[in-house]
Image (cartoon, rainbow, N blue to C red):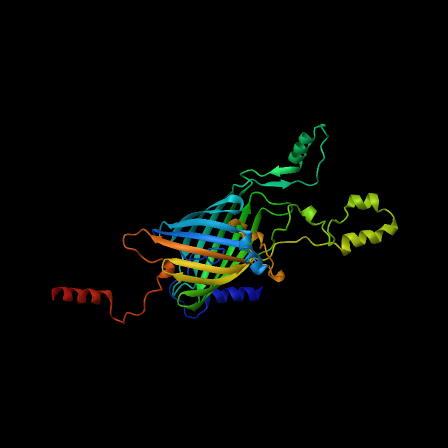
Length: 377
């Protein structure tokens, strides 16, 4: 515990030289936002793609044949410190409203930057989940009617309120020098509806960083940690009965008490419920890494990841793929910035990318004076 406190203290009050300018190249790390602002009266359009499993290589064109989860969004700077935005995600036909507020900025006195990030999310796709245990209603004698009754009794259709979720996060970043920046983001997510045995509220922390490679190229990485990730499957009871043999499930207490009552049946119960039993599978730790390219008003992010989710409130659910099984997804983010100020000003993350070719002391005032002299001549 003391070691953790020391690490946090070192992160906040290290006496190394504070970097000037922005900590990251864009308002987004990879999945989570960065502390960078959109800028006053600036509009940031973004297009995000996450493709399918790239494990099969060229056979599926590295996951491109499996389709993509797509986000189209926009964020607008109301002030230099406050931005609001909206997005639409293809998976579950999700709509998001979000906002970022800059609270503190790193300086020679303050060793870190802090922002608040909030998201409200609404899924609009129809979602039906099976209920367990299955109930067999009395037959009416009409097969079609019996099927409809059984479907309605054993399945639940989520309401609009069930499909709402919310996120709040504190973004804390520090630019140690012009080459390296780090961000920690404690995150809280509330989901109105969750699968059995899961909690509606979940806490986690996002850890991301940036390493400058070239003038307009950065290496970025990001991992999202949470105490409990979602399990794979629609129902925990069904998932916990899976075994290593396809089609064979573990025995329930009712099965054992009615069918395996003799002492000689104990080895069969032990084999089916212990030896070949599989633990409930859970989604993996979301981890992503890649490169950012800055070209004028564009920032292009290309990376490898194990998570396809783009909705912010679903990032704590866990990753869809497993690097240990050589499963991964290729993804990219594109940012396009527009300024609506009369005198166009660069975005916060572009302010430090000024041209250094102008000689020292040759300011704009000197340029104006030389222009006036040439006009007189």
